[in-house]
Image (cartoon, rainbow, N blue to C red; front, side, top):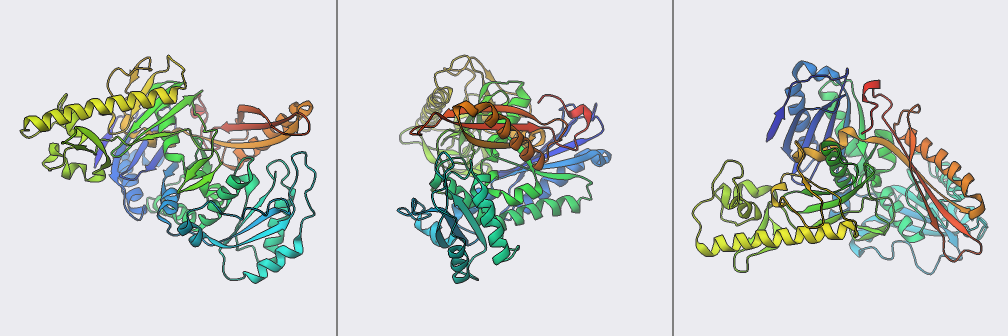
Length: 534
């Protein structure tokens, strides 16, 4: 365990606690209304997640002492949903209803999934008449009778339903009608995921994201219950929130309905936290952990989002995710002493047991870095010449890989600073080609938890429109994005549009645009002093 505390100089009447559950550590920070890190801790992540959250929250509150009563918000970022998908465990059985027959029957739902994951998740699929063309013209009438018959045939075999219609992000009426039909026919206890609320245009990737969301309802229930239980155990009068993929927050009820939106929250938290701690608005961020180094790009204080389909557990999806490049370098990365090259595996959380620096027998990049400067006030044991040369060479290889990754993420743009955070930040040299400077902000080792604590609530909406109607489409998408941000927990008085993206649609019969609008705002319970630009 590691922890730290500082004197509260101005809490502005309240404190926020951010928690980030990683694969190795669960980090937590308490932040004052003026943005000061009041207390922080790193605790081992536990297999049940709850134990690590409980330990981290208890330690931060213990450091606060009598000021614990000032805590009004607790924000959590977690990889729990990602782990469930990757490990194929605790997932619900889903019926997939695709609206698009006869135009979309050649490729069945989940066709590109890994077989073992598809066998776990898919309870059955229904290809029903419905869907729209790009201009909104119906492909076929909605086949309600077929949906009812197929649901009856699958009765008792599924835990949730996923509905996906062709071009439903622009024309969601049929999906909403099917949701009402399912709840009326099967019961309101069966949750329904609608693709127009989750993914962007692109049928198969959006369908995949919607099915993953439906399969995660039980997982979401467990982790939301864990957070609310731990907060209740500590007798905190605090509102709880979850971090989502784009660096914003959502209320617990929203997270329970859209658990798939938490999958990229860890990297997004790191990027936002690094921006807050460094003061940078546009930068390249590198978060160096025990196993990997994750790089992202900060654009106007928010993570740059990927424009390409992203894979989650072997499944292609198109919901919003940060543009992240993961490099197999971390403090626990094992060094091959025969070649002097970092391997692709890591000792992970066993670093303090297995690394040479801590009395173990496994050479790691932490050991290599300690040859240049002291780490953790410890000294390496005597090394033979070959081992020393291998460690020195491995550190040089690591620096080259980091520089190559920075160049890839910059997309040719020069002059951006490189902000280094994470417990393994010592692996990054003080000068990196392609970066104007290297910044190492204070408390960067818990930047992910800081990112959760300072995040805004956000929402996004997509619209298809004729070019001549773009102004009206932007206005409608903006109104919908603001409503979603408020639903996620934003203060209605302060939410605003933070991004508008217009993309031409190819192969349309007339000039067509896809309009994507993002809104964000401070949380509804944040006091006036905290409604600052962060």
